[in-house]
Image 1 (cartoon, one colour):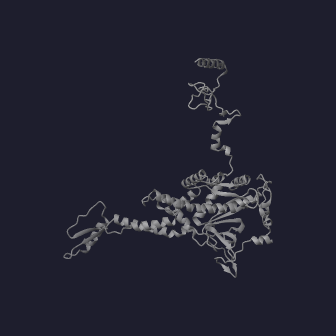
Image 2 (cartoon, helix red, strand yellow):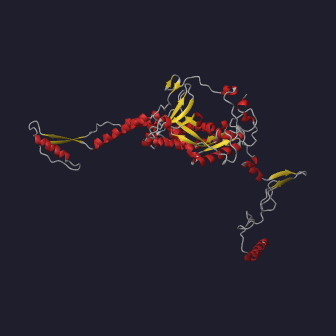
Image 3 (tube, one colour):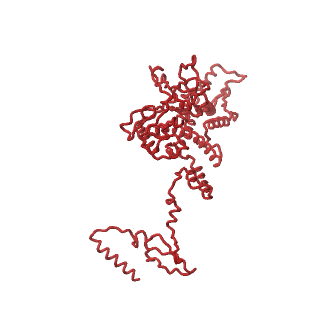
Length: 532
């Protein structure tokens, strides 16, 4: 039954990669057996008589997130920090079958030329959309690659091969679902982008032509949940608090003048009040007033009784940094205290959050992009543990971003190997290396080949085999203990042999005119040294 469902998985993998991956018809018994059917109802709106009449817009204000990233420094730096850590050490494509890995790399090269951009830029945009909106929509572009690709491509269902991918802005995408939460199609909302376009002329895609990346997607919902929505109100409150403090500083910097004219015994005349107002309007900051005894000017300031808003400001700042998943020192705020141990733990917590995104992106890229490319080339991306042979699956793997933790783990693995707790293949697997290795190329094997080899002869004597070295001293072959080594010493103690023989410099080529004279001179010098 399983062979009928995935017949390409039981073919000989040593054949040409031009074999075609077959798909079981949708009306077959086996296909219905493996088909996932949703019985629960999804959370959706716009239904009339059991049918959906409208596309579903995202329940979150994505435009507000875009404005927050573009205008607020804390939100901007937080997303830059996540994006930098996400692709900090790069990524690799790994698999048991080298041919399938090379095939995927070749397909990526052709897609880069078709898209006019590196594949890494596409991955960066996917990560950026996921971090900001919790959703990313990637549309597939198909075309005829047979005239250009070196091998034949046979996509399932008779479709054209994929020539590239492009990002649909998440803030403009609407989803069409049925009552059981199954996605039927996608549409891009453009009434706010292009004048004169109606919903009928909006771009639409079938469900199989769009890859939907979504994090924190609740059951029954169509969209993922961006983590930043819970902190936007805190960012607004923090900025309002900072504006209030700015107004307070402005008020304290320019004090209020209380100008009193007249006394109870001698009330002020009407013209005196007008003259006092004119004096205040013309008062300069570095000037003063010369007034008669009936005029009294008092400067009203805070006098040490103003409100201390520092604690309120730190409270809202802490709420913002916590909501963004960062600490104060990640945003460059160094006045919050804490030692190196605390900051290291905060860094590890940030790495763990980034690795959660990396695991999701790696699984989705393998499942939705790499597997489809392998199917087009006739490879089998499904692992068959019960069938002998290597698997064609290609994994998308991120490199370790926490280098310090990686070094500690690798050191621990080496210690387990030294204590004979694991074998060499298990050690190499823990180090993310190929478990199969030529042991004669390892360091210990190389050192063993450089050591003298002792062999016992039939007459009981021992023969020492020394690696060939020019003019090297022969080691002792045993003999009497503490006795002098009577074997031949080095040929020339003042000028021993090196990689150039007994020459003090490399064998430099000279002109033909000087070759005979130089050879005679070298022979003469060597003859004089032998006399000694």
